[in-house]
Structure formats: C-alpha cells, structure tokens
Amino acid sequence: MGIQDIIEGKRQWRAHMARVRALPPDYRIVYKEMRKYFFKVGPVDLIDGTLLAGLVEFFEEGAAAGKGVLELIGEDVAAFADDLIKDSPTYAEIYQKSVSEKRGPAR
Image (cartoon, rainbow, N blue to C red; front, side, top):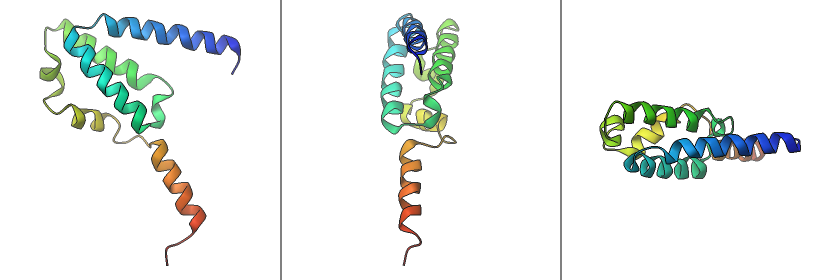
C-alpha cells in the first residue's frame, strides 16, 4: 500500500463520515453504535468498505422517506446488525479455525 492509497482511503473515509453527519440524529446514533460493534466483531468484509457504505445508503433512503431509524430496522438493533454480517466470516472465527487446525483433532 503506497502513500497515494493511504491518502485516497482517508479521503473516502472523510466523505463517508460527512454523509453520516448529514443523517438525522437518531440515524447517526444507531449508525455509530453499529459501526463500533462491527469494528469489535471484525467481519472480514468490513475492510472493502461496502458494509458501512451500504448501511449509510440504506439509512439515507430511510431518512428521505421520512421513516425513523427504528421503524426502518426494527426495535432490535443488535439483531439487525447481526443479520447484516451473518454470512460474513469474522477475524475471530478465522483465528479460532487456525488455532483448531494447529492443535489437530480433539481427543
């Protein structure tokens, strides 16, 4: 990764966060909590940027339609977040698998 890639990544992240700041307050709160959760859980797909960008786009459409964030995603924010990443491997799962493979079969 060169310096130009780092600069471009930073530019894209700033543009992404500007879109987040433009969301209504309830959407921003839910987005930030979900982002924090995704960074903690570590879905592998988070790196390519489509998960968070898609979430912002979904929230923008909901806000434009005049819906509240909980009306859009439901009352259980955690279940919604888990559903978004249910088919994505996480770094924790990859690590656990590598540890299990190193140990060999259980006795």
